[in-house]
Picture 1 (cartoon, protein in one colour):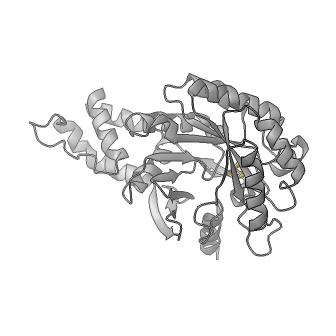
Picture 2: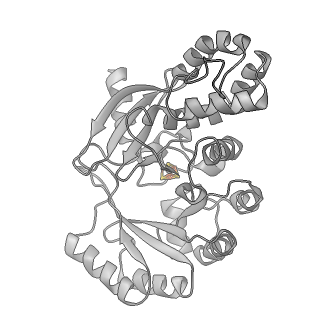
Picture 3: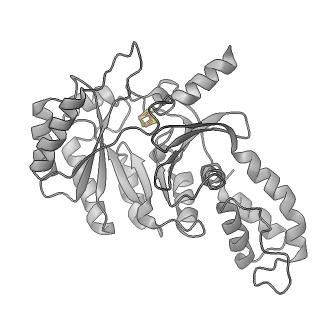
Length: 338
Ligand code: SF4
């Protein structure tokens, strides 16, 4: 379901644009749709025909994203396993400091070799209303002031729905534009479309290596753009919107944590309006990839930082509870299959 379907249903009930905005804002706050709209004296008063139709609409919206289970972690984050109307499941993650990570697809076609979601391939797209419904659901649990599109899926492969969701969250949803973070492996369409939007989100680019050949192996179905060229595209967007690009680098021991890679980062990041997020891989037992040792991570971070690259180490939220993207869903699907 798309947001425009929801707005269309309201219009059919007789709602004017100002009424649609009010109901939409109540939904996005995680409140009942008729919140504060019943008293004729209230400036939020809604026509009777609209109010009569709200219970059915409310039911439909609640069915878009239901909380199947919640898994709090020691770091203040919590993974939410969310069931969609057709029984498919995605994950959202409540992040510390009022953030939320949302999914944009069931599965993903990019197939990054270190990602559980990529192993299933793409099962289906999420409609814009399903993306926004994850925020409404999370706001029943705690405030959400930042939304990152880094859960299951490649947002660029579902661009229209993600941009619609961003537009609504950045207007009726009350989220600051730079607190909406569009994450991508670097699809050229993103660099064409994002600058044209009314709500221009911040951008996170999955880099993972400075080497084009290694990047092809790690992200087999990502657009084949040389990392240096990708960073030039990112830089142009960062300068235009006025907030830095976040480059994501999943650290895989013995693969992309070499001294050569660190020195290449120094060259690539020189003069860039950028932040580098090093994300140590979240190893499972019998995993083909391992996370680098703690001392090595600290050494790399210090090396880059001292030479002028703004570097942050970001552990994937909730590592103690099947932290990698898609692991929770994979386990739930397995359980259901058995
Ligand atoms: Fe898709 Fe992101 Fe997983 Fe890569 S890391 S397979 S883009 S969900």
